[in-house]
Structures are given as C-alpha cells and as structure tokens.
Image 1 (tube, rainbow, N blue to C red):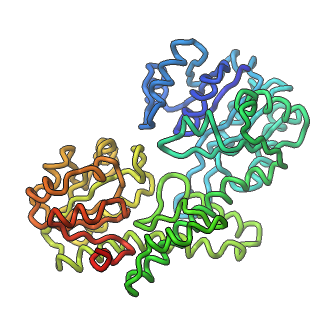
Image 2 (image 1 turned 120 degrees about the horizontal axis):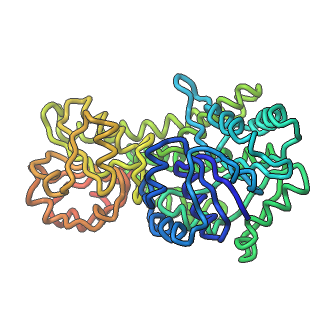
Length: 439
C-alpha cells in the first residue's frame, strides 16, 4: 500500500520505518528541519536499538522517502497515519491537540475521498470526532477516520511495531476497516489479534492501559513505603504476590518510579478529560498514583541526607539520566528529577549515562556530566543508581570502591546484586528493602 506517516518523532519515525519494513511504500512528513534532515540522511534522531539499521535498509530498498510537506504524491496514498505529539499543556494537565488539528488541515487538500486517515497519537476521548468535523469542513466530504492506538515500549519499539501483542482499530465504516486490515495483513497472518471497536473505545485503550500500568507501579511503591518502616522487603513481597496469575509480576518492581513521555502525561491528561466530561471522580485515584510516584524521587534524597548529613559540598554521582535503559529519552525522567533535587539540597552532582549525556547538556545545562564512569565516581561521597543500565548492573563494585571517597550506593531501581556489592565493601541501600537484615 501507499501510505503517509505524518509527524516523525519517536512514534512516527518508528512506525514509518516499520511500515516500510513490511513492504509498504511510505512517505514520511516532518516539519522539523533537523529531524527531517537526519532521517533523509539515514540517521535516527533518537536512540532506539535496531532502528538505525532498519532505516538504512528501507532507504536502500527505496520504499521510504521523507518530506517537509505534502505534495501530489500524497494524493496517491491510500492511508494517512497521524503520529504527531500531544504534549501536556503548560500550566494544565490537559493534552495539547493543536498539532493534530494543524496536521489534518495540512493534509486536507491532499486527501482523496476514499483515503483513510488513521490516528495513532494518544488523545483525549472525543478528539477524533473533532478532527472528523474539521476534515469534513475542509474537504466537503465525510472522512474515513479511524483510531489505531500505539503500544510501543522504548528500547523494543521496532519489535513492538513488527510483532505487536495486539492491533486495535476504532472504525465506523466498512471501507476503513478493510483498508486497515490490509495494511496490517502480514502481521495478523502471523496470529496477532486484530481488535475492532468503536472509535471512542479505541481512543480510551491507550490511556486506560497506561493508567493501569502506572497504578501497578505506584501500588508496589506504596507497599515499599510501608516496607521501609516495618522491616519488610518489597522485592520479596512483589515476587510473592506476582505468582498470582490475576496479578502477574510485570510492572511490580519498586524504585524511584515511572517517567518518560507517556505514563505521566497520559494519566494527567486522562484526569483532565474526565473532569471535562463531568466524571472526574471516576479517576480521582490517579492523582494519588501520580503523588506516590513523585514521592519516591524525594525518598532518594532523604536517604542520601540520612547517610551523609548536610549535603552542601558533598559529591553525589547519579548513575543514569534517561527515564529507562536503552533510551535517551529524558522526558519526565526520575533520574533527572533526583539529580536536580540533590543539587537543590546543596550536593555537587555529577550525572553519568551511557547514551544521553548530550541531551542532558542541552536540556539541563546546570547539571554537571561525565562520560567516563570511573571519573564520574572518583571522590564521590555517594552513588545513586537511577537508571538500570546494563553497564551499572555489570560494573565491578571493587573497582569502583577503589576510587570513591565513601563506598555508599543507593539502589533506586533494585537492580544490583546486593551481596556482590556488600562483599566489595559497599554500604548498599535499596528502596523498599531491609537488605542488611536479609544477608
């Protein structure tokens, strides 16, 4: 099929490359000149394992091109995917959908009457109805608009695109469903479930899923708060309750909480939209979920202060900056938040990360960074593990102990082998655990 993908940020670039990998003829539309230039030259403008190689491959095959604007070639497209961002509005929890509206206005002159427009952006329920009215006003035709939420995980995004655990399509006409089944045919032929719903349900799927995952993470972090004052072990607790198949063990690791461009933004936008619909009380609990998540960041600072006293002039090395490993995404990163809180408390903070220090220097210039792990740790009064990169899990604690001023590490992700670090002379404090009592 001939398709366009509008908006080539994390979602759009990944989706465009995946569609080309599946053999479709793809036109990527991106207004940001630097991002566009990068993609045209075979460079993915963010870190995502496997995606650079896939981009080089599809460019070589010639079934993907990147453009700043629509042109006559867009008129030939059977399907247009909307992948533009819906960030949180400044000073509000609500999602900003203006980029979606701009995208459909730019698309309208190049939209064939039989072409399908598929939204993939995460939106407040009801957004597609607004976009449909805008398209109808601009074209004079009743648009074939569907909603097709994405479920990508940073670090495995290409795999999630090519072999998803489900495909959800919100449609209101048979033609649109036929087109959507065709574009995903090679995936569904392998057995991937294809779920057809009404459009409002499809709009709700992503925010409902993210709200549930956020709830699960904050639940175990709430249990960790209780464990820390009662002598219990939240890691063992999670393991024990995770064997219950009704609960499961995924997303039950306690630590400094969730971040990134999806979960925090989406639960806040969900609360805002529920308020607009007059049913805000239905998701009041999400405010507590958000609050628990933010408290875990402050807890790290409390632990460092508890160990070192006044942090003024103390060197604290924060291990990790991205919100999760195998990503350079700093959006709402707990690691960055912890570094900033430690700095505000008077500490001399040095941030290390295997991938994202250029982004830290660009977006958080007040934070000192160091690319070499050994240099970053030298003379540190404390280390804080804030992102569970493999480099940290596999680091030699004895080697690091030889360069620090004080062998203290706060494991904010419960990712380190406790006995290994303790045997190397470290005082290790893990969130939600009484690790000294467990040895």
